[in-house]
Image 1 (cartoon, rainbow, N blue to C red):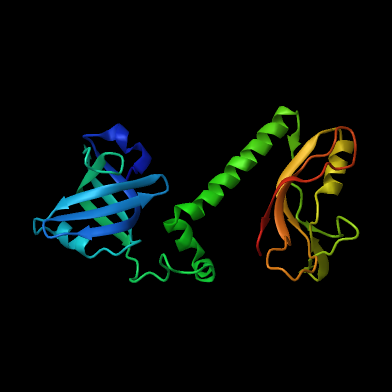
Image 2: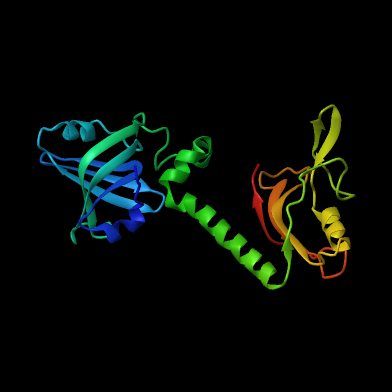
Length: 245
């Protein structure tokens, strides 16, 4: 089955396509059934006129956030607010029906949303925007480093010794021996320079087990580190983003 993304439906007006996503909104009226289906690229309105056929019963049995496949004809309709398009369904397959009611709603607080993080991200555009911003920032940092002639590295995050002195480390067991989560890629960058790579950088996680009495302390963060050309010293971290544990 070939899937068409919602963002690409404008290229298939008048054609029959198959989309996959989640039932975002249900408006099951007396004469018409409207279902808004959302994938990671956008949302589209499914419009079905009641006719007593099995498809009517299938749409009637949907719940919000059910995972569905919908095959239908793409129709241009200026009255539809979602991009001026709608899908007239020929078949609907329910891959997974969501339980109702959902465990979170618009009034759920931060702690409750964290308990159902995948559902919160799926339903709230603001939550998904965090990942879009992260992607853009990392892309910009990498583009700048590449343009400066740097080589990207991916250094180990599990080490036999602490990578920096004077900082607390996370110690873990490693086949009967102690190991430590990396505090910095410093040693590996210095070895890369000694190996003649000269200018290197890395975008990756850093772990600091420094005690704190705040809930926002950066025990784990993602940062970009780039040493100066021909030197073993590191430039300061730039573009670091703190992440809560």
